[in-house]
Image (tube, rainbow, N blue to C red; front, side, top):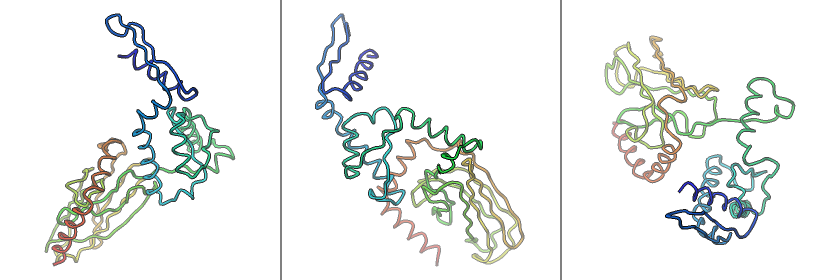
Length: 283
């Protein structure tokens, strides 16, 4: 099977420069040789669904960045498979005939960008690199749980990093002496459907009617992607905080994509449930 995979990979690469190739493996099984003539047209037909799915990623990137196709100056291909003529044609057609940038080797694009970023961080960047701005974003929304399990978003998905956000909260019970600050990441309206990153308690709140105490909650994501969450009672000055590392208990890329899809699928259900709980909390 390994030899067959290697031969198929070689054929895929060959079809980027020729219109016809042969997959051949000697003594593949029980001494029987394998041979298959493959055309570029047949290859494109077999992989049409995979090629079309590339555009879904492009569309999502434009939506998330709030840009239109007309706003794009250059299209840079990343990864060896972008050499496949059909992929290049699909992308070029989507961007209304715009020629893709071919000055960067697709196999080296990621390493090149990482090297530029490293030079900027280390302070060794030249004049050209000084004009380059590389930004990181939050892959999922970050927020805290409020009464009824509602997800109160503090940092929306795709917010550029570093980022600082402060918001005021209060108690939901009379004479409440402490609040539990639970931090979640995810796109669903209810925290039970999102991913818990951590929590802490702020204690020592003075007795008061619900809604009277003022608790200032701050979310800060630093340049290293570390999330710092703090809460401070405005009356007493009591404070507590937590720091969450970028690689500690965080979700995989596949799980992030799955959560985004689930949020789109259950958007209406989540909105109705959230509105019902918020109406109940307001009474």
